[in-house]
Length: 388
Image (cartoon, rainbow, N blue to C red; front, side, top):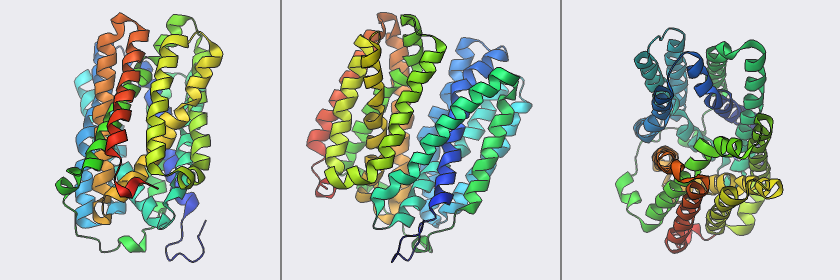
């Protein structure tokens, strides 16, 4: 999908293919890790500890690898090396016997796998050049990959057993590696070596506000990702209905990504970030108090288009605007580590500690966290670079 008049044509399908397989791994594995570990005889406490490992490595690993990418300018090399080493480490699942051995496998696999996405975001924005609003049209294929994998994996595990889990993981990691080899390197990243001092950028009020709001928003999502299914099960929804309700959210996200390039140009970054945070507070309140009303629950799930879709797309554009080109990988890694790593882990822990008080309290806290993020952003997102 080359763009006329641009010296760096956009390899649309090759970039989209990478996002498709990267997020297919999320959809194909992460909803089913607990089932696989349970089938191997691990206790709930051991399963919880093991599943926390990817979130913990997400805090440090992306920043370490992004430092290397920014310093060397070899971002595609980092992506390909990370994909290869993640695949190599994952083979240990076939041989690991004890929880400790599985923990070592997860540490190695997630350390390298978490190195990949921030560099890909920078590569993609490098190809987009003066048309960064078109990022969402490429990223939407990641959501399509997630849906395809979560549905396909569920069917496969029902048909052939959860023992197929490691084989599926290997296949998807191999697909990520192959797709990374097909992505060409943008010419305008050649020879890039000067690294922008990250500390100087982070001290800016707009960057501090952005990181805080992202942390709070993902902490609010912790209740959703960890306990939404259990919340619906307690109310009386069956597994098929629960799966369909999850799909509603991701489908809404896909639709948002499809039109995001127009929405971003129409409303601007600051407006979208603020609207997404406000709608997040509404979404968690609806889920906490009206999940027994199917219509309201479906409406709440469609708001995933904003609480994840528009906020993430606008967030990627925010990093592009606030960080210089030589600091892009570090900025993307910092955004992911603080928001999805630290924020996600903190949110899951808070939700678990409060669950005994009832699901309404847990989702009310999520709504308050989103409202706090909105208040911080209202005053912090006044930087001229975020106005349009």
